[in-house]
Image (cartoon, rainbow, N blue to C red; front, side):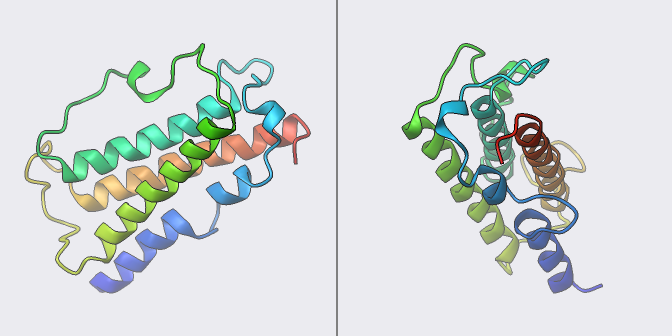
Amino acid sequence: MNDQHVRKQLINALTRQQAHQLFDDVVKDFPAEHYNTRPNNVPYTFWHLIEHIRIAQWDILDYIVNPDYAYRDFPAGYWPDPSAIANEVAWQHTINSFRTDLQALVDIINDPQTDLYAQIPHAQPGHTILREINIVATHNAYHIGELGILRGVMGLW
């Protein structure tokens, strides 16, 4: 397997429907009256969930590119405040920011100067861009699938 093949696979894991739903598909035509709905037995709203996906993705992007990266408190630093609510502007901001950060990750992967396998200089030992992209892809797939299932359970498709 050559480097270009690995890069293509990483981009596909982030942006193509493979064995998981896509972010744009699960947020498309989402009913605004349910942005702040908490499904039964779920401690967060639909907006909290997409904001969590965005924050986690942004955090890993920051970890990759920022030599002054600061660790967030876990789990509180990766979720909006439980009392926070979203209007249309906040919902769209979350979606647009997710897309922008996703494109930044794709750009890093596509950059021929990016060594996917090298230690990130300011990161913990063994942390490579390949590792970080895989974490983003699996974390996104997990929670995007969760969002899709919750939409179905609530009859919001």
